Amino acid sequence: MELILKHTVVIGLDLAKNVFQVHGADAGGRKTFNKKLRREEVIGFFKTLSPCIVAMEAGSACHFWAREIGALGHQTMILPGQYVKPFVKRDKTDALDAQAIAVAATQADIPTVPVKSVEQQALTVLIKTRALFIRQRTKAFQALRGHLAEFGIITGTGTAKVERLATDLRDGAMPGIPPAVQDAILAIYEEIEALDIKIARFEKELALLSKQEDDTRRLLAIPGIGPITASTIKAYVPDATIFKSSRQFASWLGLTPRAHNSGGKSRPGPISKRGNPVLRALLFVSGMTLVRQAKAKAHTVDTWLARLAERRPYKVAAVAAANKIARVVWALLNKGDTFRTPAQA
Image (tube, rainbow, N blue to C red; front, side, top):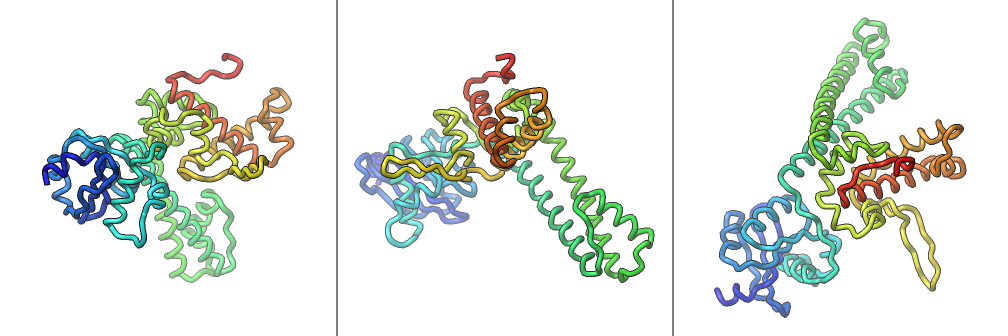
């Protein structure tokens, strides 16, 4: 068994909650072992191996295991699931999944996911928790407006309008609504107020963190990027150097046209919307901000974005601006440069 382990150069690790599957292969791709490991056996098993490539599929806890196994001297790889799936043979089993991961890891041009540090994962948790509270607040708003609509009261969107309505309920200005319903509406509104406090707390914490890192401070200088977007970029883009160009980075975010080339003819389609949807949405919002500013200053400043917004739909211009922002982000992170306006460049 020791001789078999010595000849193992790549291992596919199928992660799980309790029972893991490992598939080893030698330099020729031949199987050296395929076995199950319980959670408490994983670290001990990899301690017995000579340094080799350990690949795993992107998913829950993959960054934790990549850090732990990497600390033992192994080269760890995190592979996107869509690039592993083509190598799965026949039916789906843990053994075949581990084998597919090992085979995919040997492909020369296989894309990999950078391993996040503990600090980057902590930042990701803050961002996701804030997003969770925002979703809960949105659902509470929708429930509140829906319940009131059942009694003929239509409430407009926006916190201020709902706040006025809650004040009217407390003052007894809506006698047509049953007391039980009034209590339910006020309970929902109190939940919205509590969520607002939580969201504000996380936004304040993210704003403070964005001023402590060199990368995020430089990102804040880019027009349209605020503390939340800068922190999200830092959390989800651990290493910008893995992208060969700014276009590849924008493509990874799903902000480039979907390609369709056949018979020497190129027909670009809509943006692919691949990649991280949270980061893409934030950059799109940043793009909308730039479009509004460009249109407001169009009579005094002639910019490419203002001209684009005049002849193309608003959202098309916003996507173009988001693409531009993404390319600037790549340049700053990849080259360690600082942002300069075109007039200063």
